[in-house]
Length: 232
Image (cartoon, rainbow, N blue to C red; front, side):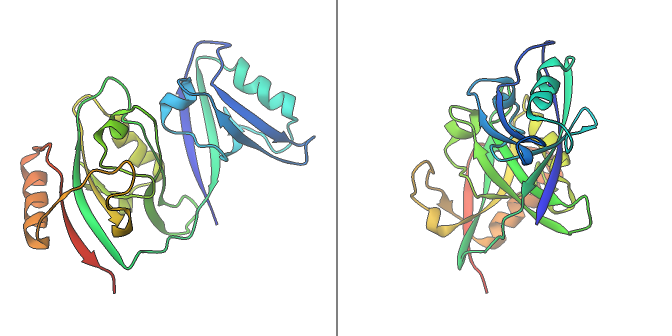
């Protein structure tokens, strides 16, 4: 099953996006992003992933374009380039035991460094978990240390992601100057894993009471709190 997302990037005319593209009608398979240059426009956008398929560039459908034509479209685009991307929706298998945590990311001068996929489908396939697919090295999320690839974001600043498309969730994550509060679900098997800080335990009732209070008052905290839940 596939998902889709529309990404808008801003650049100087003729500047490179920092992506490597393979494929095209002359290559026998759809154009696909095979590499992203660290520090590039595409990298810092936190919207693009390796293996994303480029379905359209500025509304020009790529199905009948050669590899060379696709590369020219990305390089010769004006200061705004709109990419329609397709990605594989992997089957989500919930672990036997999961935990939930409240994570606060401090204000940043650039995006938090989180790339997500999933959300409400455009084509009526239902809603899928909003999954963190990439955390950019040395970004705010990376330095925070409490998020990992595979974590599911259930709410952003109190807004539940189950009713949002991927684009809508990405827009919420892009507003970074005021900080961001995330409510996440993660697998207990990840506890103590490389790159994840430990979290203090808190009861289910107390956590939800705190979360509801934060939503009502519109305040945030830098502390991380979590509780354990065993799936049935």
